[in-house]
Length: 230
Image (cartoon, rainbow, N blue to C red; front, side, top):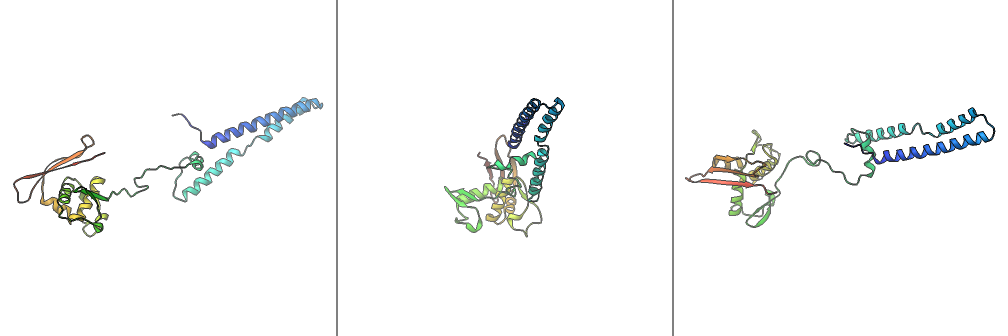
């Protein structure tokens, strides 16, 4: 991969070239003036070298390194680890910072916010429930959401709030399971009463999941299917 100079590196390079040009110009000028004034060539050469060396900023790189190190130390005190000093150089010109959301901006915990059934959208939170749990549309939605899932609560969490329980399964399925646990008053009991006898798990190729269940007090079987729409 090609190396890309940072804005500060380009500015420092430009400054060094400018200072070098000025130093060489004055050095050569004083060398010529010294020769014209009758100084020996050795003395004129000493003027030339002295002026050039005097104009070279020897401590420039050290100063920039110290400044960047102090900035990185200050950022570390704010829980921001800087692995490479040159990354600090461009922070002053940043207008947008994009970062990985998982575990950074969020807690990596999905929650269901709304449900759609019977041609309307309702809030999923139990305390904001504005629908009849016996609504045929909700019953159909809950049946698929609870049964067409491979997510399971970890054992010995009955005393914890539903949203704090750990789930073994996909993040989206875990959110649906927690939601159904709230609205059905026990999603796993609902699943146990409708035993799964066949399943085609979800995968990234077909983007759907299918399962077949027994129906209590009925000789027929129930097939439920979940499709992910991108």
